[in-house]
Length: 412
Image 1 (cartoon, helix red, strand yellow):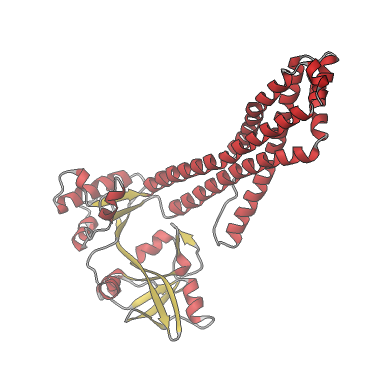
Image 2 (cartoon, rainbow, N blue to C red; image 1 turned 45 degrees about the vertical axis):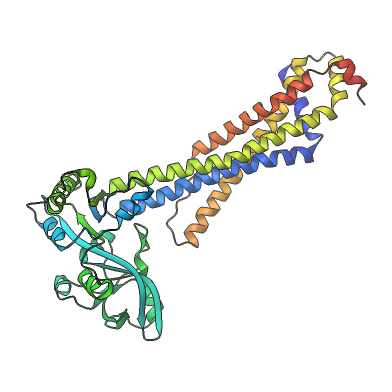
């Protein structure tokens, strides 16, 4: 029998049981939708994070206290007080770190900011004007505090747009005084609306001199990080080596495996985030793929029931000249048609829900989320669905092909 007629017979067989065919397809649709949605969201999240990191500047180098953990037991080693004033001064010295680099200590924590009866819990950052350069945002009202304020441990602050709105509403905030803990800070600058940079919300932060934050807010003498902006992108690798050498000499470290600090460039962060998101996406796709296996088992069960119900039809076809190969091909085509149709609907539904998710995260989550529809997900969806149909359709098709026409015609 020609393949064209076999295909037509398979389609007619499926149309004769529309409800059963639709329910069988549903399992494949859900599995493909899940895979596409997970891959789209995973790549969208990766793109968002990478954009945030790259927006922080390709020349930025972050020096953080504590050893790079090699396992869960080493996590505590990340939180030390190994970066202090002497390290900051040494890294500022061009004789140690070559080039015209900008160096800034950095501290951060979460606390409540108060103005009269209004309060807001938010992120407090201790830094200098370099922090704003890295964020690429500058006060549109007032000014950024200067080096004199840092040396004098001044009680001055620059606040983000959300802080201004929640504490002061429509009234002018410039020159007003806010309280953090028991320390009073005068607002000298207001930042324009910026959104997130490096996963930090610029609109929801308060920036004060790092010296003031250390003494009056945190009561510490060390830094949470030292940020360095290299002179050029090309000088970053050399600067990293200079930083490591300088800190090892200061801390008396001869074995690099015993470093009590971590040096990370933006490229390091990009590479690390790419690996993490790829692994997580692969893991979630594998979990979503389980639903495809379940859907395939459902197809096999439905096809076995169909073979039993259509025993007399099989006997009649064989009596009229159909070969076992024709019967095998027909039932195999039915399984493949079910899964391919399910794959098409699953791809369409996955694309739609991925787009709606991206739209919702952009609109309601205030995130610069890009809609990503990976073509690999389309090929994966169609390929996997066809493979599932082929694999799980073979056994029922063979059962149908093996039936004797005489016994099949006698079947009640």
